[in-house]
Length: 159
Image 1: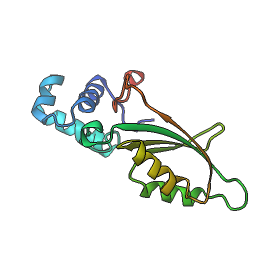
Image 2: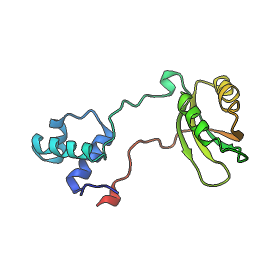
Image 3: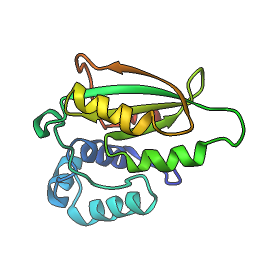
Image 4: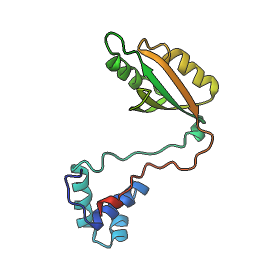
């Protein structure tokens, strides 16, 4: 829950910055019909409150040679000492894994993996994931087509 009370202008600023984080303060001010100084104060308040975590450049995976996207579910060994910490550290060191979520259900984790091709994926699985001592089982699914892929979060519920 946001610690900051968000009015329509704050929500519009967040919406615009999610679409284009490189907007200048002047451009942002024009789009929300305010002068630059109050817009800058609002953006700084949103940053300080942690609503805006960071600004990044989003790369096109295919154009940089990472044309295969896989989703991998992972089940960890449950006997003895749980390998959660060890697995968490390992995931941080695998550059192919761009997202990892702890899940409910039959599997423990869901990984989003970007690789160049099937051979790259095979090397990742055989040399990294399946060699981890805590991994009991995994299942892979490959993305065939991108229907929607956005980093923008919905804001309508804040109104």
